[in-house]
Image (cartoon, rainbow, N blue to C red; front, side, top):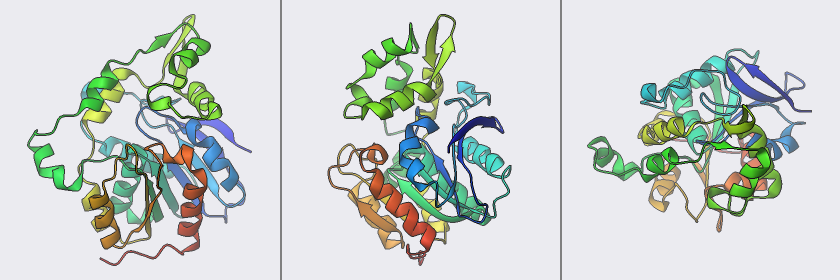
Amino acid sequence: MVTRSVRAGHGVLEWLGDPARPWLHFAHATGMCAEVYARLLDPLAREFNIVASDARGHGRSTLPADPAAMTSWRVYQDDLAALLATYDAPAWLLAGHSMGASVSIELAARRPELATAVVLVEPAFVPFDGVAPWQDGGIANPLAEQAARRRDRFASVDEARAQWHGRGVFRGWDDADLDAYLAGGLRPDGDGVMLACAPAWEAATFAAVTSAVEAAVRAWQGPLALLHGTRFSTVSQADADTVAALGGAVTRVDGASHFLPLEHPDAVRAAIRAAAAGTVAAAHR
């Protein structure tokens, strides 16, 4: 059974049982929250001890989120390491979606003693061949501009639901997944509700997108799996091929969009199980 609490400043969903089971952490995408992935993770609860957490500035996190201080996703890595240290777990299978995937691989590369394997689902990052132009300021970031303009307050959850249902990033979402986002991604605000992830914080996070994923993939010496879609994907075929050449187990899910974890949860669960069972070959670099 899943429990909900706040731990080390993070909102957490926990499915905890026999401590001898493998330990799995799942990290969410920018602007999302742990609740969105509950339906994905719940079927794994008899096989793993699972923690899904709300990153700083998201969901039920109580950590300070000053947009002016958001200059790098390193803060998310440090926060995750601090959270994991509060559990009596020998090491973790680190999995995540979008920003959460990139944070997971970069933390594993920095702190390999924390991780047994890494599963990346549609990681968000500066494309490998775009790192130099990005660092020179030569690539625009429309996602940051769009996030800054998001409406952040609604009279009720029902109004927010009506505003988002079938639109924008929520187009094609199952109603249960949208309701999960509403439950975790909104906070009471006077007589209404507001986004838990403030538009300014979401915009600052997009603006600080990591350019170090390729370096992290090269540095990480353990099992690595990458899943990516073919519609509005953050992963180009060239970058997927690079990950495969570096020893990662790459799965392309035809027809999947950036929200692959919600559209094809069975594929994600299969990758997690394979990584835990050791059937994802360790990378050879």
